[in-house]
Image (cartoon, rainbow, N blue to C red; front, side, top):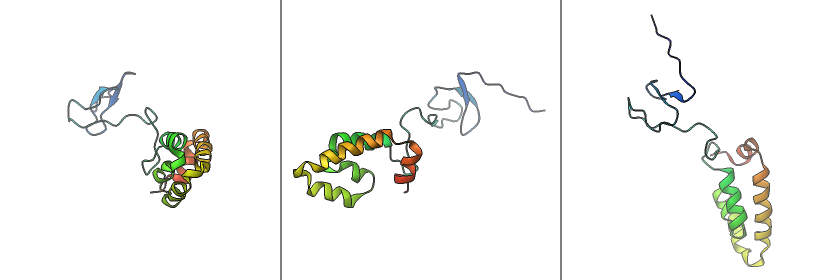
Length: 116
């Protein structure tokens, strides 16, 4: 007869072996597999690994050089930003894009930039 295991609030099951471990454990003591952090603990990322927060910070601080465009996979626009960086227009546009990225929802970001 299978025994029912109840976990406490500070416990979780290992993603590999199913052993009951502490919720803050990074590595399972039984099988040695590294545990993934729960979603939303650090920075949420799109399916291709890009982060909305990183893109926004790049746009705010390095937007005049188009670094955020390269990060988001928009290489053509990144080159345009680099060509016109001496006019300071890309810096203004990059700052505005950074704010827009900050207020954008994760689902909107994934839809627009999440493709691999």
